[in-house]
Each structure stands twice: as structure tokens, then as C-alpha cells.
Length: 133
Image (cartoon, rainbow, N blue to C red):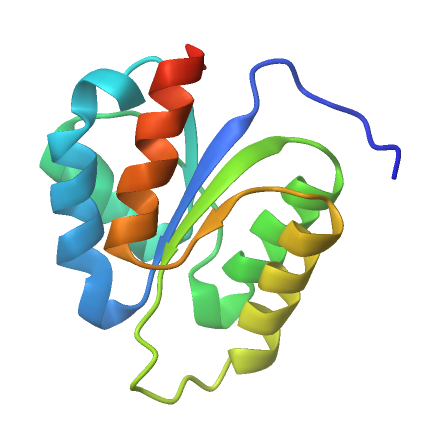
């Protein structure tokens, strides 16, 4: 599938409420890597990551208000190189269709999507080894 590509490309950070502190700690642990990246996040997640790490983060709307879909649109237009979405699979979310749409667009455009801490660690390690950034 052809899509325009941004040579810099965002890394998207998203986290359900139960995982927000986890993603902020993850960003802090990998701060040296993330300093060389363009970050985008849903509003609450991005605000927390920025406050905890000092990293600049472009924020969209909060997830339930359409932020997941906004990031999905960035994926579809070639502006995202990877998505880290720390999900809480044990809690129902009223915006579940938006979450499914984001996951679908990552699959359609072949964008790596980490949905738990272990896969996020592997993704960041791989990007760092490739010299992304």
C-alpha cells in the first residue's frame, strides 16, 4: 500500500488509565532513546510523560474523545513509525471500537504495535539497534 512517509516519523505513546504510570516509567527508562525521537500521544498520557520525563510530546485528544483515531490517522498518512499502546485488557473501555480501529490501521500499514511492556521493550531495543532517530 502506498502512503506518504515522513522521514522523521512519530513514535506514538498511548496508555489506558491503569497503565499510564507504567508508560511514564518506561519513557523515563528509555529517555536517552526518546530524546532523539518525535513523540505523539493521547492527551492524558502525553501530558504525564512530558511532566515525568521533560521530553517534548505532541498531544492529541484524550483516547475516549477521539485521540486514538487521531493517531490512527497519522498512521494512515505515514507519519508514525511505531506505536506503543499499553492496554488494560481486563477492563472494559467505552471507546473499544476506536482502539480496534487503531490496531487495524497499524496492521494495514505494517506499523509495529506494542501492546504490553514486554513487547514495548523489544520494539525500542530493535529501533535503537537500527539506529532509528
